[in-house]
Image (cartoon, rainbow, N blue to C red; front, side):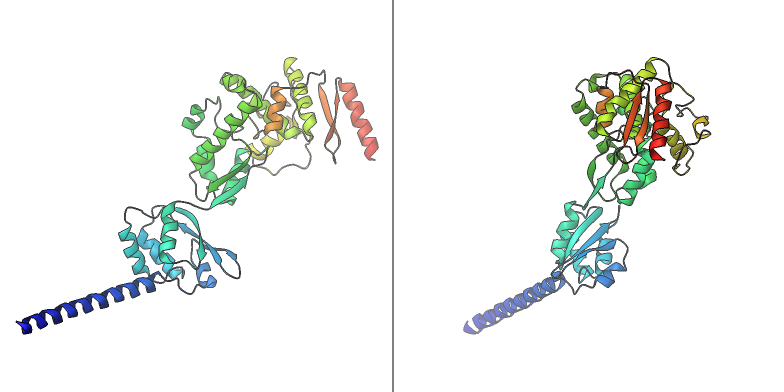
Amino acid sequence: MRRIFRRIVRIIALLVGMILCISLAVIAIFVYGNTPPAFSSDSAAEWEGVTLETNSADTIAVRFEVRKGESAQSVGQRLAAAGLIRNQYFWYLLCRYYDKEPVKSGAYLIEIPANQIAIHRILVSGKQILMRVTVPEGLTLKKTAKLLEEADVCPAEEFLAAARDTATVSRYRIPGASMEGYLYPDTYLFPSAYPAAQVVQAMADNFFTRIGEIDEKALAMPPDELNRLVILASVVEREYRLDEEAPVMAGVFFNRLNIGMALQSCATVEYVITEIQGRPHPEILLTRDTEIRDPYNTYIHPGLPPGPISAPGPVALGAVFAPSKNTYLYFRLVDPASGKHYFSGTLDDHIRAGTLYLKGGS
C-alpha cells in the first residue's frame, strides 16, 4: 500500500514539476515576446507607414499607419520589420486572443520603448493622431483641397469630389453645383486619412452653426436669399483689407446691385484666371483681363457671379448681413501698406482719388 502511495506521490510531483516548468517557459516566452526590442530609428525610417516624429533623450515617438483593410498579420509583419516589436508570432497570438478588438486603420503615435500589449492597445483604440489644419478666410475649394492633402488629411481629388457631390449639396439646400463658399474657414483637428465626405460635412456643419451666430435670421432664410448673401460675402472677403471697411464695401456692392451697375470686382476676375482657367495669380489686372468672357467676370456681367468665389469668414459674412448705409459707388486702394481704401460716390471723385494717390506715390 505504501509503495502505491509513494508512486502516486512521485507521479503527482512529476506532473506538478512539469506544469511548473511549462508555466515558467510560457511566462518566459511571454516576457521575452512582450519585451520591447532595441529600437533603431534608421530601421524604422526604411519602412512605409512608419515615421519618426520626435526624438528626445528618453523616448522616441513614432507615427505608425495602419492601412485601410490591412490584416492584423500584415500589421505584425510591418511592426516587426520596423523593429517596433520583438516577435511577430507573439503579435498573432495576441491578436487571436483579443479577436473581438481588431486593429483599426489610421495613423497612431507610439512612444518607444513600448511593449507589444501597449502597442496593441493603441492600434485597437482608434485614437488616431489628429492633424491640426487651419483653413484661412478667402480660400477656394481647390486651394482648401491642396491644404488638406498637404496636411495628410485626405487626397485633394477626393475632397473636391465630396464637395461637388450632388447629394451633399442637396442635403444642405445649396442652390449651386458645389459647396464653394459654404465650408467655414477655421482651425480643424482631423485624423490622418480621414474620409473626405466627413471633412466636408464637418466644415459645412461649422458654417451653418457660425452663420446662425452671426445673424439668427440666417438659418430661416430661403436658400436662394441666403446664397445671394454668401456669394456677396465671398466677394467682400477677397476685396477688404481692414475689418472696419468690410461693411462699407458691402454697402457699395449693394448700392451697385440696386441700380443695375456691374459689381466690377477684381476678385471675380482673379477667380476666373486662377480657378477656372488654371493660370497663375496675376500681379496686376490688365484691361484684357477684365474683358474675359466668363459668367464670373463681374466687369462685363451685371449682378452677382453664379456662385461664391471663396470661403467667407466672420467679418465678410457679418458685413453683408449688416452693411453700412452709404451712398458710395466706388472704392480705391490708397494705402497698400495699411490696406486703406478711399470711398466715393461719383466717378469723377473716384478718378480724382486715383490721381492723388499716384502723385503721392511718385
